Length: 291
Image (cartoon, rainbow, N blue to C red; front, side):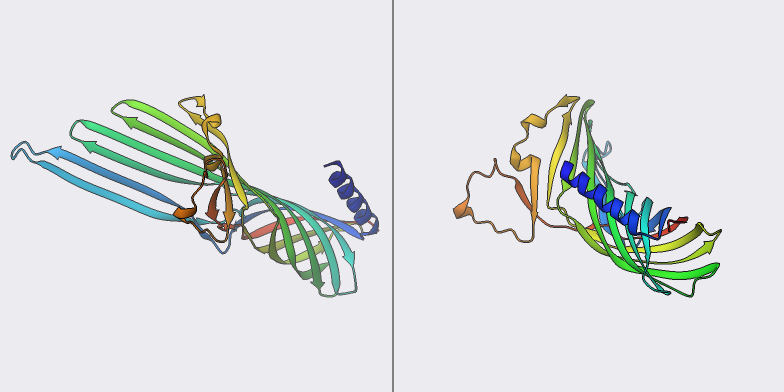
């Protein structure tokens, strides 16, 4: 870890020494290229007694709704070292941090049979944080007080993605609660980033800018682990087997009952899935001339 920190410090120091200017900005993004991220559902089953006929009367209702979005939406902050390659072309080496938008899915099931009532409700909240490296080429018109430009380049991100689930069950007045947190991890994410913006010169040292930033990116977790598991207020994380607590995500799964073995002590295997991280963000900030 110390080597990584020292390397990062050395790179930043070198970039600072060579850059002509440094820019810093903040912004807020909305989902772009939204994907399904969960389902809200509600189901009810009731059985009552018809007092006139003496027969039981049953009815079932349900509703399901897809939730779409992108965890790349939300607040973000970024800084970049800026270099001039020619009159109309520049280079930016940026680092950004994004606080992704949180999404919560909810489901409920109610089963009423005469005098017996069972109610189960569940909510699960997903959230992400991301640190990104954003090198980009900058193309601009002839520099003047008001200068339009656009940026294009890759984005490399390290994503921290988590979920928190809470389930409550009420069976004829007996209430059971369960909660668990899951951390998804593994690998860097590669995407594409572009921006259109304008800069306004304030004085020889200071320039203001505003940008509309487009980011196209998906995150594919390599593994996940349940880090918190509580039942009725008691910590039960130690009762989970490795097969339940940990999951590895792969492109292909094959099962054969003739080759079954003890899978309790090895992580579970599921198919890979994308976590949407695309966004359109409105950003604004300042650029300070260093040389």
